[in-house]
Length: 164
Image (cartoon, rainbow, N blue to C red; front, side, top):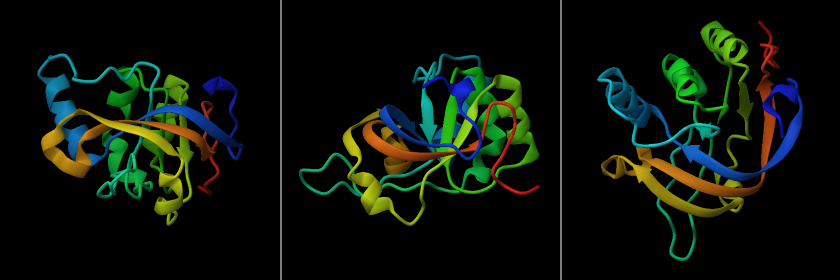
């Protein structure tokens, strides 16, 4: 999968690693970066999934895991791309600033079905905490997924599935 080849509206099934993080983790990551310190995770070539997994049932890699509203994370998007992230996953429309960041950095924003967190959790094969364990469900996780459903919501040319 080449990020630059994906088009707005295209549906894919992704298998591989995702970095899971949301508001609190991104805020803390920005503080670290702003101080000029080395981030605790390497985002180069990674896809960031805006989600917070529910409590993990015994014998499962994660609990229910669904996308959260991406627009809340728009202020951190430029930082994620500077650190090397190649795409983000969440739900909902994003700001013009986010669309411009995708275009500038040639990156993609995916959406995945919301309201299906229990079903999405069955696509997760492994999970581990990478950083900020004290944040609980808002820690930074690495998950490995198989056939994870994604729709390109903003492509690397700034085309979007959302009406403007």
